[in-house]
Length: 267
Image (cartoon, rainbow, N blue to C red; front, side, top):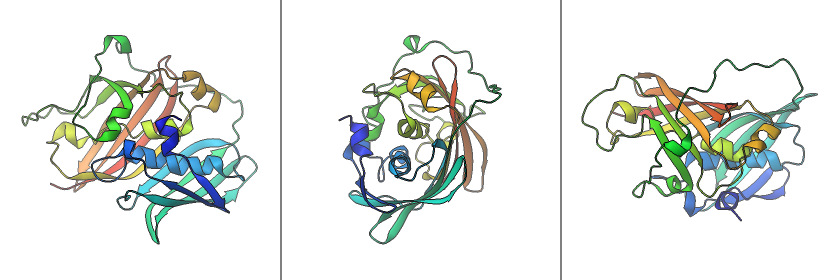
């Protein structure tokens, strides 16, 4: 079994409850990588016997650090309409809620479609050197990352570039085919934008993250284990919080997902 599938493996224990556990391969500086916990919450929705349609939106609120060990996920279908379904999500360790969230699934139909946010012109992934981060948290080693611009500075010298935009090619390091849970995890691959404007020693953490899935299951599956182009940029840094947006395209230029995060920082 792929290490990602090991991490998101859940047991349906009845009703709306699912049991899982953290995985050492996805360890972060404090607790697990946020992207893997987002994928675990989404996996509970995908496994639920009452699910209608495919994921369209996922919001995850990081209420507290997730401790190493077992957890319970509650995925409750709060409202089901003819073509949409709304979910309430919670991750618990003991009696404490460590993550909350919501999701929306839907039956998608053929309609008018156009993409206004086109993939930017960049060098192909084979021409961009891969970054090997041996001293970073364990989860970083799960991905292949090829930064085009805006990589984390090796040493911050006080220079402010005037923006926090990052562009990079990325994919699963063990070439796992893309699906909804792995796309949700990759949406959290962008480092906090503050590290582009200030030193990495600034304490911070994501408070909430939303992912909008703009591609259907067939388009996502067609990516296989190919590269994705990611772009992220902060919008405002103000009084301890910043918001950052991101886009994820397939290598052929399809916009697969967008993401939005609110990050707390202390300075």
